[in-house]
Image 1 (cartoon, rainbow, N blue to C red):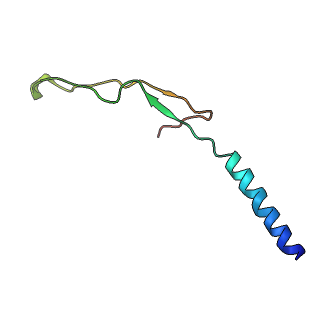
Image 2 (image 1 turned 90 degrees about the horizontal axis):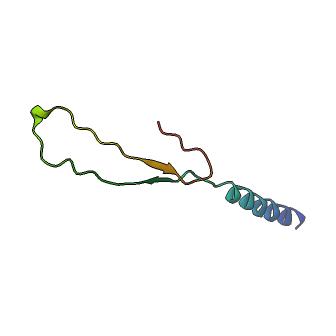
Length: 63
């Protein structure tokens, strides 16, 4: 019976430890889409810039 109590305690402790460390980065974009309008292929490459912020408490890694 003592082993059962020990296993239950360890399982509960592990649950608390792992749930507390579940912080994640949170990426938030200023705009989610961009309208390029009308253009021809001969106009060349079209580009757009999307600005974002990490609202999470851990570093955001882009790869």
